[in-house]
Amino acid sequence: MAKHTIEVINKLLTHGLLAPSSFNLQHWRFHVVENPKKVSHLFSECDWKTTSVQAPPESAIIISGDYSAWENAPEYAKHLDPDFQALSLKKATAVYGTNHRTQLDEAARSCGFFLTNIIFSALEDNIGVSVASPNNLAAIISELNLNEATVPLCCVYLYSDAAAELSMPLNPSHLDTMLANDQW
Image (cartoon, rainbow, N blue to C red; front, side, top):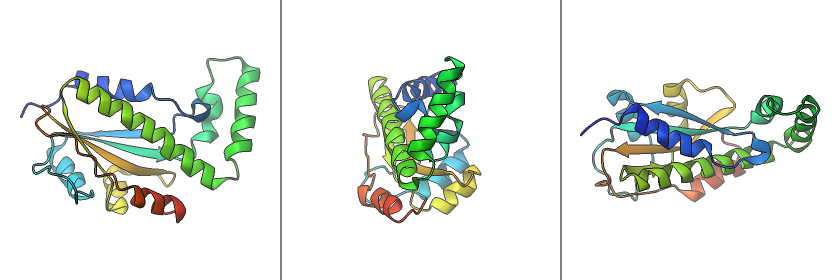
């Protein structure tokens, strides 16, 4: 299997970055993993109960939600008027500041849009892609050295061609349980 070039991965991520997000806060964080041992380890830490994927993929993009993104609202509006930057922080603080549930919901929603764009881009370029829910959050958080406000929501695995059919065993009940029980 040929490794994905940095150009291919950058194209997928560029399409992901075009996804909409509340207040343009871009709640997503992503980690590209190309080390075969790490990819294999991450692959083993996901929920593959309903997929036909047999072999470990070449690359992985782990998409995480950052539920503290609202704290950086002025950074995302820095290209705008300073008064608008202040207003952006004021509004983001009013919506997210004390509402943990909203922080979690918006992070998950934004990451879903990011994921959708990556999938469509991969399919358009005939890149094999499979998506899974993290099974062992602690192992993935440790492997990627994530901070406490950033939680992996899905793992995107890339193959050199579309021979690996798109399989998406994202377990909605798993995500719902995480959200309902604040298990981020």
